[in-house]
Length: 113
Image (cartoon, rainbow, N blue to C red; front, top):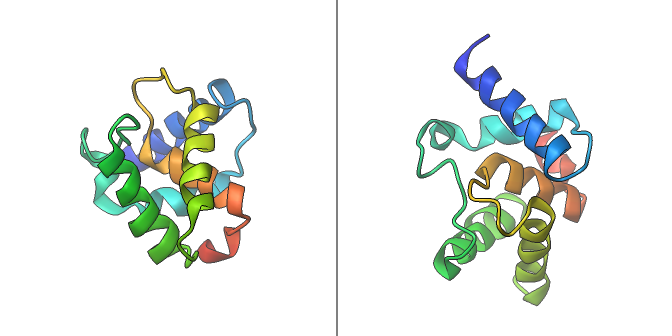
């Protein structure tokens, strides 16, 4: 099993254990691949949920650019909802998991078809 496969398995465990859902492994794999080399960097692989600038980056770069969603308060509401689902006190919120949850939240699985 390669490094990426190990990370995908770790993300799936987080979705099951911390978020209480069974992941769509095909979609999780595509979202993880879409994160690019960031998944291998300790800092870039996680989302600093307590930093407004980081959440703004998720909104702009992922929700608006990648998923093509229009700007609006519902984007930040969705990010905060996903952070709550993951567990606000959870120290390591993996970027691929946060993105996966946002894709599911907005029903944008087609962005990875």
